[in-house]
Image (cartoon, rainbow, N blue to C red; front, side):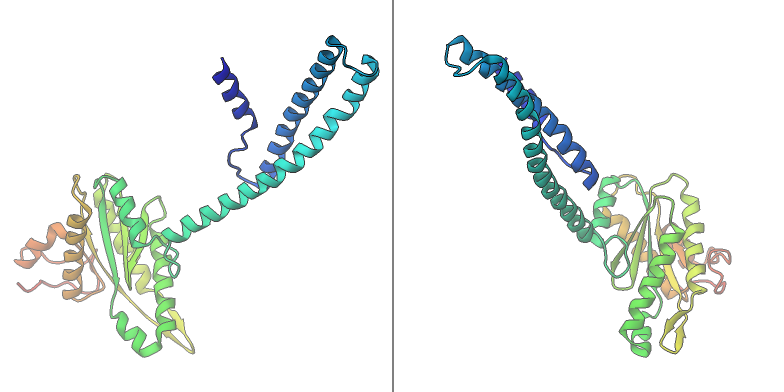
Length: 284
């Protein structure tokens, strides 16, 4: 009984977390009202106790009037102020913690997830996802020709295209340098190639300002299909190999890992739909 009572009191007086400053005020008012009623009840009980032992130095009725007039408003005001101060401190700490968590997960240049957050997202998917790796073609030449500031603008522009193209809940990240990744958790694995190529086309149409000039860029991509509970390193390696093939076959194209063996034997031609830059066979 004692534990139950204690737990109930703790639940009633616990502030918890807050979603906004307005929530702090409302919780403080509600808590203060409880405290005021509790203080008033204790005051009344104390007066009757003093009467029972003959210790009350004045008449009971005026004492009860004074207790009723003074105790609830005074205790309410004090409790509101105290709880609001503590509540605002808790809210500010929560906002700071959320911001720190966000910063720790976000690549500040692109606004996408960073590599560590992306790998955690992949691990949470238990490997049941497809992976797309994108890489900006000839990015070093952009830095060398237009400067690193223009290179940063290119990275930000490509990131925005990827974010907008994969805007239906897919997880997008910049995993290092000029390399990006997308985690595709849907069952329709065929659509991922179409979406990846759409991103490629949109990037190819970009003109990124670089002082008085503009930069035209392209990206290449590699796709590793649904993981089947495989680990991150394995599926990442497959996507990376497909990306290497896309680069080696002329850049500005998307290659799926499952097609690499057929491509290397010349059994199939790179699709002009997915790879419109040119249609050609890969050398062995």
